[in-house]
Length: 349
Image (cartoon, rainbow, N blue to C red; front, side, top):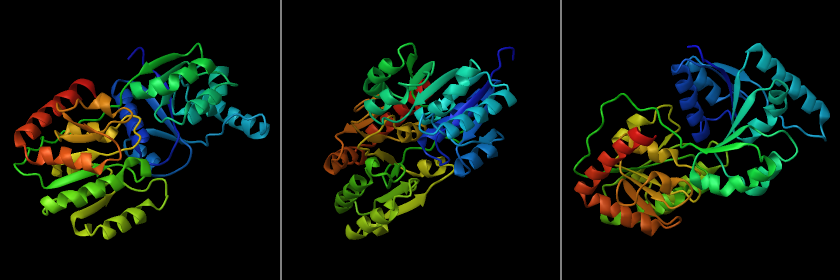
């Protein structure tokens, strides 16, 4: 491949969350298209191990931001990045977040390498204005949703007026397994998310409590873990105990391959209070599952109300109940949404 590039991809985290799942998809896609990806993580952990399992080149290097108050660390980081760029003959740099971009930017500019900064989370316009105000700017910013662009771009234009801006939705690697059939009866309803409070697990369980009064056979599956180590699993387990629904709830923890569990679900709920994009929705949609999502962030860019899912207000278990009840009671609607979701993921994600 004559235009093959050697690309440095820098992750902000060593955990396996949505950001690193998207970085995984990007890295494998680049390799499949003849490029050579080199992935940097700030420390060892589950994500570096996952990328090594794919046979990808992993580099461990701390992400230290330039600081006039700590010139020693700043210069040490600068020279370390220089060595990495030179050793691997890097052509292009992709930073999976602003922290990664800040850390590498001085070395990238010293070697005249273009930097793409992928914005996956909204830390507020003040933060993004500060992040690149006093240092060289990335050449391009990518937002995972139009919602993110609308929120953050005005601040970045002030600090990075010459940068390019693009919206590129996340994507999923499609499973090669046969697509599961839509069952006549809804038995299992799932949530796929880490345990941060903004993911709306409490609303999911309050919804479950109400639904079980009319459909006592339902099972509720929780896929994900407390990647922030905030003690959230204990909080959630205590809640389902208080609600007396523990026999109807299964915690699956973090799964390297979520598709077998998704295939066993009938519906997937994304009850987030904040959601820059909504990777869980397209993962479920790729396996033909009807989805119910909240009207926040990038989720309305994924789901068309009443066509391939339902969009409900955030922090409203009752609205979730109404949407799920409609799907439980209408198999034709579930079948139609399933077909639309498969087509939509193949076309857009």
